[in-house]
Figure 1 (cartoon, rainbow, N blue to C red):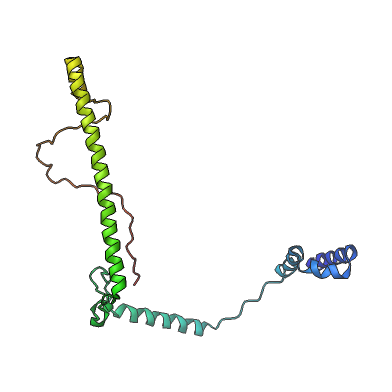
Figure 2 (cartoon, helix red, strand yellow; figure 1 turned 90 degrees about the horizontal axis):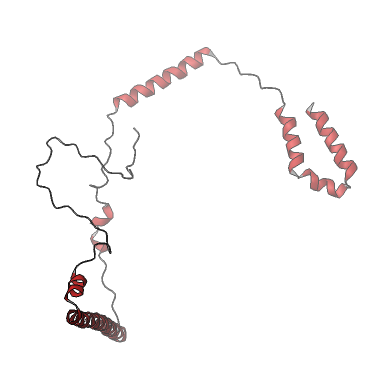
Amino acid sequence: MAGIVCRIASRVISSQAACSSVVAVRHSHWFTSVLSLKTSIAEPKKKKKVDPRREIMMKERLKKKLKRLEKVPPELIPIEDFITPAKCFDETRIRDAPKLCFEESERRAHLLKEWSRYKYSQHQTEMDTINEALEAQRQALDELKLESEELYKAALSPDMDLFPFQHEGPSYTPPVTNYDAPEGKYNDVTRVYTQ
């Protein structure tokens, strides 16, 4: 059946295209699927006859191997957190600081001083801005106090709607005895060892 399909397909291809295009079609996915159809319908292979004595010997060998494995004591699973790597004990691994030339050390010291000056000026401008805002707020409150005492008290009272926050004080109830605290969610990254 598959041979007939292959012959018909090759005749159709050869009649529709010239010889040069047949080579290109032969390497197409359609032609390979037809070839795989031909090989897939092949007859099933005959089962080899197995010698029963040989089969029994194989089973005995497997039993002996299992007995040997049972005699060996189980290997303990290492706790990796407690094992210090051997390379950490090597005394020659101590790294010294690189020796810098005079120009490089001076350049780094100058750079560090410039950075500290920049951060100091940045801090000073921030503090000046905060102080100016606080002084302006104090002056505005003083002017408001002269205008109306009620508005001044309302301005000093905290606005609870600005940041909605509710807080209850600590409870002094004793802890529940024999309380089993639930574990939180976590990602288990424990290695699994097979023996």
